[in-house]
Amino acid sequence: VDVIQPTTMFAQFKGAKSTIFFPDDETETVENNDGQMKVSGSSAGGVDPSCNTTITITCLQQLYEIPSLTTANQTNSIGITGYLDQFANLQDLQSFYKDQRPDALNSSFKFISVNGGSNDQNLSLAGAEANLDVQFAFGLSHPISGTFYSTAGRPPFQPDAHNPTNTNEPYTDWLDYVLSHPDPPFTISTSYGDDEQTVPRDFAVRACNSFAQLGARGVSLMFSSGDFGVGDGDTNPETQQCFTNDGRNVTRFIPVFPASCPFVTSVGATQHYPEVAVTRFFSGGGFSDYFPRPSYQNEAVNKYLSDLPDNTYEGLFNRNGRGIPDVSAQGDFFRIFLGGVPKKIGGTSASAPTFAGIIAILNDDRLKNGKPPLGFLNPWLYSQGFNGLNDITVGNNGGCGTPGFSAAKGWDPVTGLGTPNTVALMGAQVD
Image (cartoon, rainbow, N blue to C red; front, side, top):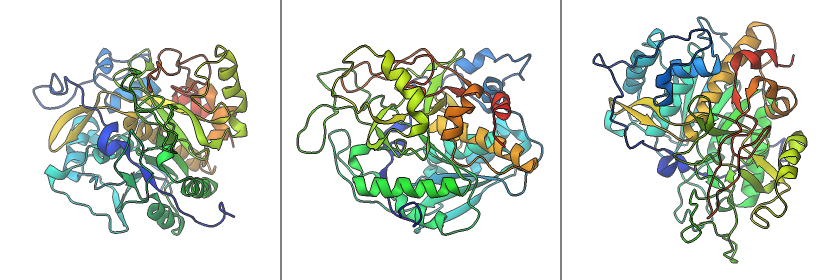
């Protein structure tokens, strides 16, 4: 019943308060004398060395073999969700396009207000999260049309030690809105996430089922996996804050929701080339306490668990839970424009719109060839799509007073199945 009838959910954004990271060297060597970032075009599959310290549209095109589209299918579009008074600034977008995607100059996006969500274009109020999301998602997928949803409000909340204050966002209103309207974007990216235990379980289940409804309508949903490894990103047992909020106050890994919903595609973070798991923060990953492992994950996740030494983190995580993340993408040192100036920024908040931009391009190719959009991605990713991904085997995601999990061959709870190769993913698509 829940999957048929639009329902409700509440979530918390770690992007607004902590999933955005500004590097210590953010103001160093980020622009040339003319104000534009210079990265040479891809040569024989090469990746410019500058991409190890600054990520641009061109870097991602080189790393992931992303084509630049000259035309787009008129029925295709990509959406970005915004919460917590995060405003996507149009002036900053034009500065970004001039810097990295000059063929997109003077193009814009559709703005939709949900529940009174505002669209303040004061440059001083530009949102780091919103700007990052629209600049890279729309920049990668140009000229595919883009939509930015601004949703106002706050939902119910169950505090925990890591997040004592309600910064959750009202997914209820966004879900009700988008499910009640025809023709939602075929690709939607969300860079917000909660400690799963801070979301009332019944709301999380209903929301997850609402995400399933969107998938059934041909919508691919990307969510960032979080930036705190297996919980709080703190590897020191003396200062970690991974305690259950059920009255027992016991140490336990803390998965992230909505990334833990089995009907969305959760995106972790990598860095550098060759790629490794991100190190300046920890790629969110682990296993849901709310949602059992879906059948499409069984083979890949069981392989990882069977290779773990006996009693690894016994009692700290749910071995039967939905594994997080599904995939990953570059997630640090992204060059954006914020408040009129270039800045470097990072987080799985960067990885999700990057992966979404690629899915929008895959959908465009399908639509131009008379095929339906990809819709819910995960069954395809785990059965065939992984052949179009680069397996990441180096890195870990510490937290909760531990080193966390380690990346490994195949799926792992740090980088998922790996990072995209767009050309290979096109070849791995289903009809």
